[in-house]
Image (cartoon, rainbow, N blue to C red; front, side, top):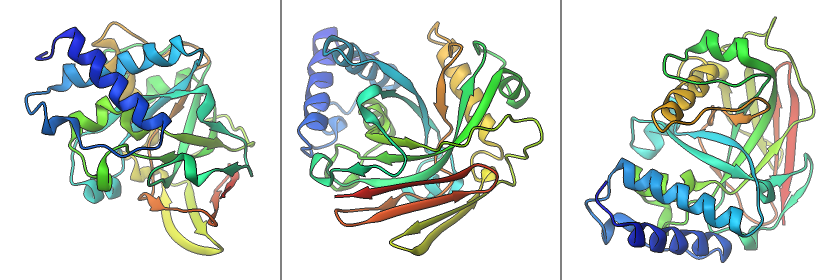
Length: 262
């Protein structure tokens, strides 16, 4: 870690304010080029503290940059992890105010709900499936606070991995009998197909992303608790949206998810 606690708090407040006010800022490594992974997650942890102080609650966890398509799109090779908060949840079929976001994009994901705690190190796909209560379809609305959606990995981790909004589907399925690798996904924007994917786009199996998250948390002395809602990362590339757009995503065996931007 290279940053002092006062600087970590300052940067957390800076990014959290940018999110609340839908204001784009320059990536923080411009001013702090030595910022490392420990600094980045310390800033993210401080954002969590600020949110909790505001009365919000942690609603779940998210993996980001886990699909090969998304890694290629963003020019990175390493997945990142962040937090979801209660105010980010939007009901299926609901409206999302575009004015409250900077440059939103949507990506389709498979979300896991755990029936028992999951703790690393050593978690793998089998560990995740054994600990899973059910899976649901989901769409994450990401919204980097950085100008022109340009960032490096430490900056995006500090920015809580661009977490903004999420929508979960209403069809819950046990993992037994499902092949999450071949589960097909079709995303439509304003009635036109804009993305096709299968679960295997996420690290070969979406449960692999959850395992990586559990192992990463273990290195910080944390675990995924029973009942945790975990978004495994975008299987599709991120598709830009604006006011007036409608998104409908169909998931094989998991129903569909939709939302409108107003």
